Image 1: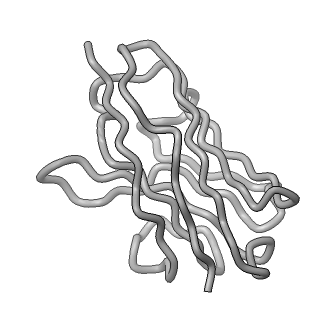
Image 2: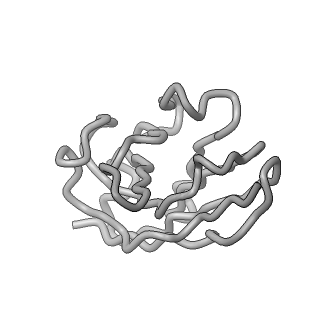
Length: 122
């Protein structure tokens, strides 16, 4: 079981940037794909980005392509989500999750962090 803790959220103006971190514990981290999800009030949790076990393959929701970059540093047991050119519609609680493969459906992941709030003002 991989344990995950997100950090790096905060308040930023539209057009600004944030970098989220997902710190993991557990010896299986390097064998886990990591997905980032977000959930805004009153909305379903949605897939944002994912990275495979090696970091060689990444996946993005259409809404964030060209603006967000997911990466991982297995030596540090950490996955990052660099968010550039943020928009008010990016406002949500962001979660990282670990699973066997990158999937876009939240139930596919067994381990989840507690979430970190990202707020983008116009």
